[in-house]
Each structure stands twice: as structure tokens, then as C-alpha cells.
Picture (cartoon, rainbow, N blue to C red):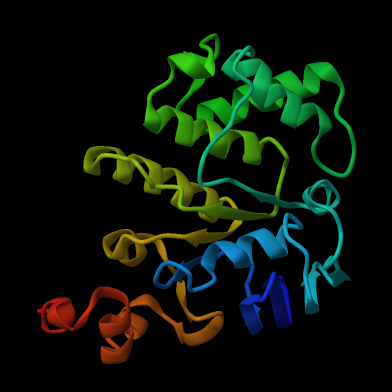
Length: 244
């Protein structure tokens, strides 16, 4: 996927100001930046949930900027949300199965969709909770359910908006292991994340956004060793402590 001079506005606020990036196949790219830097706006605009003011979004050689969210998802670009909102009355298996049934460029037969849903639940560690309702799930399980829903759409590029939010430290590593296995299986991932440790663990590349523009881009340790990035992101009192 590529974006070319992408601009997104909300009222009088320009959330993205000419963002041009390229996401390579089978890589994990993490978007870093302070609150309001444009990270979630990037996810929202690229995935069709917020309008693009100008610029281009190109996926697999096709211009997708301006398409609706469901049309973009059918082309192989799926996303998760900061706040999961599953359908409360459905079981985990049925909820994920609906995504499998209706996702992708072609509709699956019901039996194939059920099989795909079970595969996705195995991948995300939720197969043992297949009969549970979302109201019975923990925060960590809800995060995995949101990931499972997106994976059932059969994406080639996955956009994750703060996937580790609300997770205890002991729950982070298993989630990261899932993401790394997805990358190794050929999926490209773009994630908004605040955890520097998580970034160093999984990112192939970091894009640091500041006030809607790309301030720095490159390998994670290279970006996070930039004094100006650390001061902007963590504050000056942390600058001397990031790498000892």
C-alpha cells in the first residue's frame, strides 16, 4: 500500500498534512506519535471510515481513496478499532463466522465460512471460547476477538488501532506472538501503538507522526535513538534513559 500526499480534515482541523508512505509486503509497520499526531486519523482515512480531502491511497495497484469502508475491506484491507463493539447476542464463533461469510472479494459458502472462522479462532487462541458471548469475555479476549473478526475478512493488509490498549503486561507478549506469526504467514500489518517495548519487539519499520506529518521513518532502533523523537514522544526527562 502507498499513500501520496494524503490530506484529511475534520472541520477546521487538518489531521493529516500531505502524508506519503509505502508499506511493503510481509512487514510490521508501527505508527508512533503523541495524542493528536494523526495516527488513528491515518487508519481511519486509509480504511474508508473518514473522508480524504486530497491525495491518493493505492492498494495492489488500485486507487482506493474515497471508497467506502466495506468496499476497501473486500479488496483485502481490514482494520480493528480502539474500542471493540461486537454484537452482544451472538456467540464468538457466529460473530467471526459472519465476517468470514461476507468478507473477501467473493462470498464463501456457509460450511467454508464456518471452517475459516474456526481456523481464525485457533490462530487467535479463542477456540476454547467459541460458544461464549462477548459479554463473557475478558478485555484481553475482546482484543483477540476484534483481531479475529478482521482476520476472517481474509485481508492482505491489516490495520490495528491500539491493539494492546488495556492489556496487562502478561497479556501483551502472547498477542505480539500472534502478530508475528501473521507476518511470517505473509500478512502486512500497520499498527498504532504506544508501547516502546512492543515496537522494538515486532516492528520492521516505524513511522513517527507529529502534527499530521511524517517527522521520521525508518528501522525502530534508528528512529527511537533520534533525540528529537524521544523528546517529542516521551519528554526530555526520559531522553537519556531510553537506550543505556
